Image (cartoon, rainbow, N blue to C red; front, side, top):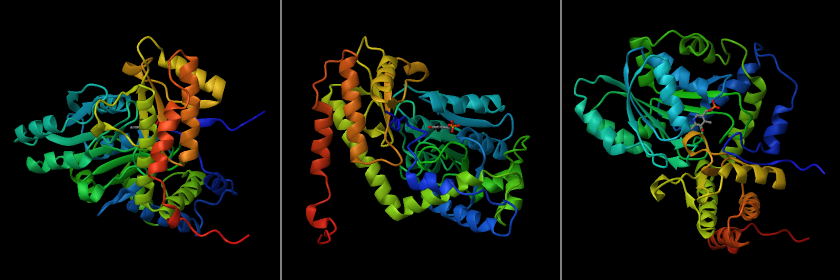
Length: 401
Ligand SMILES: *Cc1c(COP(=O)(O)O)cnc(C)c1O
């Protein structure tokens, strides 16, 4: 028997059938007069998802890591000082990239399970009277530990210090699932990718930049770059084209994902993620397990990293779920390898799917020697979904048979 694998890693996420079908179309000519009909509305619609007030969006045939690189190369010079924090595998990799590209990183090394340290950022920025720090970096949603950070809070710290540094945000596992308000929060470079909230295969590096970032690009000059150079994209994007071959099939898919997201409504998408994540957290609680995220203020609505009980290898949990229940969970990365397993709950997801993964995890935990009571986690999630369900009176009236 062959059943589609149940994918509960925090990216790539499940691809809805509509999106998959939207990509299963004949290839079109990327230099034709028709091509901009596909691309120009995508650029405009992406601005709505990022909630931008000005600036523009770049789309590269790369993964999210490419968008990180593009943000740095186009605005900062080798030797520029930047403020960063590290509290999980993705914030760690961003620091690594910044150092390899020659930036001088002032680093806040934080406990894994916490997020961007707002007070430390505020202190450091207030003390930097000479404005040596050119950019402040924040990982919106640390996928390795299931921690969401307060980006509005970072903006407040910058404003309180009247600091002109650019604000860079990694929202690869946030955008399209968690609220992102680039305009309101004064975010200058926001990084995303196709394979998480956008429910697409990997292959698009998405970078939204403010007018301030575009100005920095002109005045600071950035560093050596080619593939990710903004200027080449600006020349061609305004007419709906790209400086090299775009990932047309992924753009076809992105058109469909944007349509799905707007049809549901961004606020409803965020509310759905919050509700489903709360159900997952209720289950974790009922199993007597703890999240890697240290406090509720860090809880991520897109991924839960769950600590395996003392003496139990989380990699064994992931492996058991995969082989026994055809269910992919996220492994623990780096410092938390062997200690956490992750449930990705972002993108195309509903109560039925959350119920399914919780059922599989419950069975797996028992298989791995964790003394959980069957029905405890799934039951707790069901209780929460039941209490918060759409009222019967609000459901559409059924048509007479
Ligand atoms: C997935 C992810 C990335 C980018 O990874 P790619 O594999 O290059 O797409 C970056 N940051 C976070 C927080 C992520 O979750």
